[in-house]
Length: 169
Image (cartoon, rainbow, N blue to C red; front, top):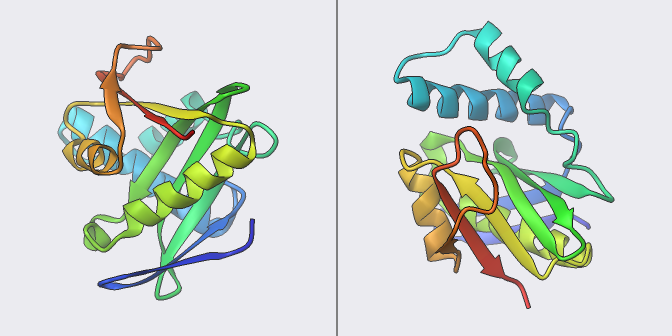
């Protein structure tokens, strides 16, 4: 995929595939882990705890041909990321979707979803699934706004509390 530019009412987001270990991707993934762990534990997390989270939940499946990882930039600044992995030949699973809190509501989440869904379709996905937590209300609202519907549990993830799916065909 080439660079995808998406104009929103608050600026221009550019979303591009990028390996999850580039400097920008690493900063975003660390911010993602800090936020989701901090919200879960209801406290700030340490760098060591972020390191441990990255070890326990690696992003290694988020590369072609089994998936994709993307970075979103607003005015050139990396402020969003997300990825998916193929669970089977027709099912993609979203993972690590994150938008910097300072830019939520500016279209970054929508831009990520548009690109990730297109990339998943290109790998044969007919549906996208994800699991999330009840306390991640912004994420749940984003998915609902973009056509994701709650479904019964499809996995037994340690932190999964609600599951979503969107048909792509």
